[in-house]
Amino acid sequence: MKTKTDFPSINERKPDGQGDGGQAYKVLVVDDSMFVKKQISQILTSEGFEVVGTAGDGLEGLEKYKELYPDVDFVTMDITMPKMDGISSLEKILEFDKEAKVIMVSALGKQDLVKKALMMGAKNYIVKPLDRVKVLERVLQSIK
Amino acid sequence: MRVEYINPFVEAAFDILKEVLGNDIQRGELYLKSTSQAVQGVAAFVGLAGNVEGRVLFDMSMETALAIASEMNGETLTELDDLGKATITELANMITAQAVTKLHDLGFTFDLTPPAIFTGENMEITDNEVEALIVPVIVKQGKIEINVAVRERT
Image (cartoon, rainbow over the protein chains, first blue to last red):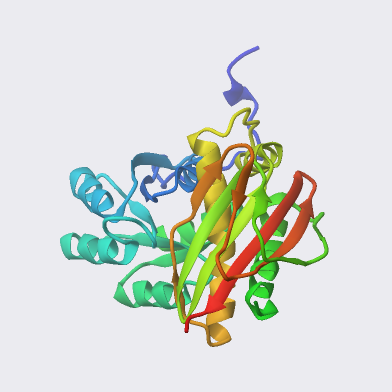
């Protein structure tokens, strides 16, 4: 048996989490719930994204973003968190980097806050419970 | 206690549980209690304060909590560790967030505390001067009791 290049596959597809050059998109996951952090990370890494950092509140999220910058392509940001909420963190991240791509993650019932975040410059939003297909769809819309 | 307070929690619980656990959900008979009630092994507690005040409890056995947390994580949890507790907390969060929207639409305004998780045996809860309405919800992992004790602030 030779290398697999001898058998071109018609099904091969680049994972959605990788850019045209094959490099993984880098994400910072900000959420105070260990469960949600794990869920988002699993969904994204399964599609080839690279989770380069996680944070448990908005302040830590802001600090991690500054630390990682410019090696971070987008952020998933919970809204309700201790110390600094997701809206304030979004605002500060955009002050630091007006090109930042931040995707809000919210439970149903926070429509007003989601609207506010979108008006302030968040790229998109995801509603919990998280659905794999929807998460990937929203993320890809936001980074392309 | 007015039944309007509990319905949004039951509806929200149905929606969220259906989405995270699958379709097999049944509703048990609603009942009212004005004295102390036994709490099963795991309870997620959310406080409400505003023009209505009180608390909501999502109450289940340890086995049920483990089975639900395992299902939501896609892996078998054998003890309710930090991840398991975070999972049940998140479940309570999603349900209350959705219920609150419905209650706000009905004109009730209040804030919520973040969910706290109680675990243990032989626990009971007593609500002074507020009756609790309880709706059991049966999923394939077991029974969750949605226990709401809320009153209008005077």
